[in-house]
Image 1 (cartoon, one colour):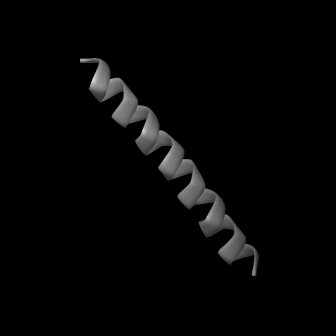
Image 2: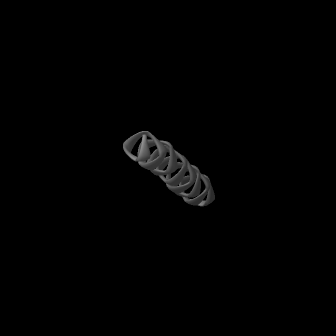
Image 3: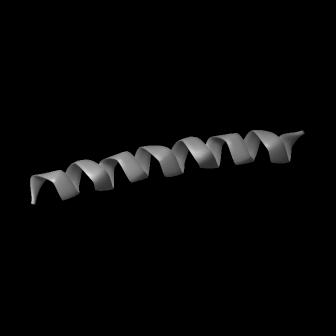
Length: 28
């Protein structure tokens, strides 16, 4: 169960990082 929670946290982290990269790309 802890592994599932970690996966969920990782997905949220990757999603936020992806959105940050997307915002940075739009500035260029």
